[in-house]
Figure 1 (cartoon, chains in turn green, red):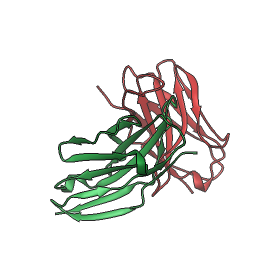
Figure 2 (cartoon, one colour):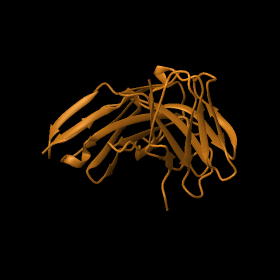
Figure 3 (cartoon, chains in turn green, blue):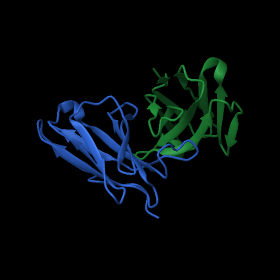
Figure 4 (spheres, one colour):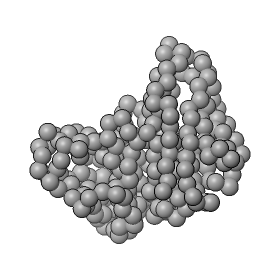
Length: 115
Length: 115
């Protein structure tokens, strides 16, 4: 069975602080995909990043960066110099190979960035 | 191009009633998936349809059913509503049935309240 755990249910930071959202996953598959989505108050899930299990290179996109460590089954997400617009719920998700659109989501982390 | 559109945005039903939720995918997308998101939790996969055929089903009772039309739009039906069915129902679309190398695009959801 697959499982995604986001232990931090809520994080509050002041603008310009750096913040890291943790994600730990469980799977017996050797090929799988990891995702991060952002859910603003409007409700839709906005895709941020996808990583396959064979690509452990860290990735940076502007103020966003991701640290994938297979040895610890973690896929953490860091926002540098946070902004109020970053306030949202962030979800980490896992997908098996050839599993279509079936994603297993974690419980989410609500990030509040205060001015 | 319009994104994934869902209707209605909000719905209130009473226990035992039936409900139909609708989803129009992004133009050119042939796959539609449905997710249920209970307040405070991550989305849970319900169904995936591709080219009008069911491609995946999550762990939901038979009260939940769906179909996809020739224009690739989709309906999710829930019979004999229970209080626990109260949730945000998200629809997602992708070009193909197994979007390993592409993004999954989500709508803003239908908020269903069962009284």
